[in-house]
Image (cartoon, rainbow, N blue to C red; front, top):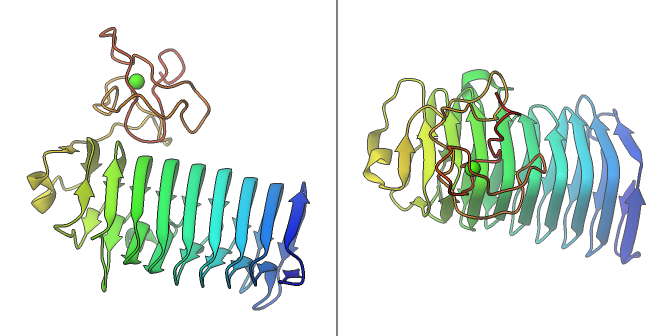
Length: 281
Ligand SMILES: [Ca+2]
């Protein structure tokens, strides 16, 4: 389905969009189109792509799922807003290029990670990223952008790298707040001295070698202690009550901030999940 600038606004609700042909797209938005998409599933297979947003188009998604092999490509001054949504589209999940603006709130990213190039921006709150699709080459967030990447209450777990800071721009304009970054092989690859961890966050990798990351006072270098195979926190996690007083809920909709360590002070937990006594253990 192609929607171009002959139409200004479209609204899609409760649809399943499947495409399985070689080099086909489930939905193409271009030429300044605004699309509000709710309660909709995209499924792509083989060489097909679920969604292409380009040439100034806007995709505004709520309760949207991307499944299959290739999810979203967004470029050329486009905008992508995702809320309460799931990106689980295989080897190439989400890629933003050329001045694309991206906002994620309450978004689950599973399988492979998300990639930002050129001058693209990401503002992410309550986002849970699990990257295992490429084995030890998996990356949670790949940053090649001269734009801003701002992470708040984000949980990243990758079998390989949590955050990869790649040339030409690396992570110079990345700001991290109240988040958890766990790369089994390496937490941050090519860690840029300009990488800003503005508010207390937790980083970890399996060999325990923090390198230059331990120069940053705002990094807590310790195993996050996830509960089983989820990213919920165990009652003994050091991430509990180390955040601020926002946002008003976690990625599951549980109220924040709550007192998780029993000291009588309500504080949010690092990452996308608030520890809820009686629920999480
Ligand atoms: Ca708490």
